[in-house]
Length: 314
Image (cartoon, rainbow, N blue to C red; front, side, top):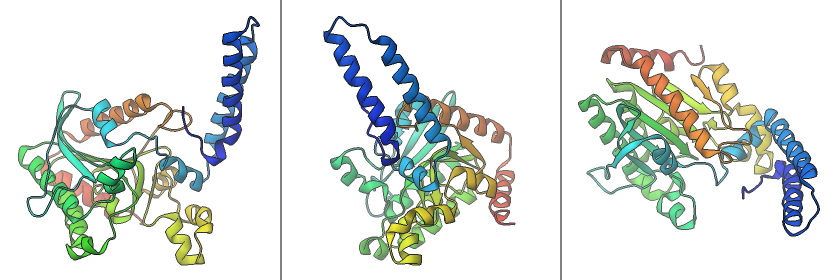
């Protein structure tokens, strides 16, 4: 059963009532299917109405929903023949960033993305999707490998930000992020990035300096978390909702600003309610963008990328 967010409580109450009626109907002789159908229609309409007018802070909560699909789910549902490649050849293998060869439809690609984990053990193993320098250096290695073999690069971004620990800083976190961003911009092959949950600061940009940047309808992408922004501006995280609105973190805002290129529609109620459909929507969108970029020469791809980012804010 889907876990409900705070603003979904009216829907949760209706769903609970529907479950009660189904249990009653299963043990009794009374036909209450009509009442159940009516409540189901009310719940569907209520959910649709709620998601049609989400605030930026509510979208942030949806983007962070623990049941949203993660990198491993996209790999399983969107790609075939995935062959993971590990390590940065310098320090260690960072499990916050995973990548490897795969096929998307009939096309061979290099896929790289953040993995947050979906239970306590896996979240600790993947460091909640917060990559360390070795993670970004692994991404650089895989992007350069893809460039040598002429393989398009697909990245799936879902991180609250790069890991801010002392040891990560000692190992050159800022430089690793900068060099990963540079590697994206220097690729001579098509690159498509998709923000599938949270896109937090440089930790996200390091995998998203692509020819085409896609975002799920209820994903968020920002230079700092709403809580972090509120703590700086108002000295309290309680103003996170105001900060999210001010920062314009949603896909709809960012499409208007030219930061992203395409919004990928999610099923009603978010990707976590119908993950198979959400993954199919994203796969189709990425395939279309790769098709559009496939005829460009390496220098044209680099120029396209540079022009895209230089035009932001103009």
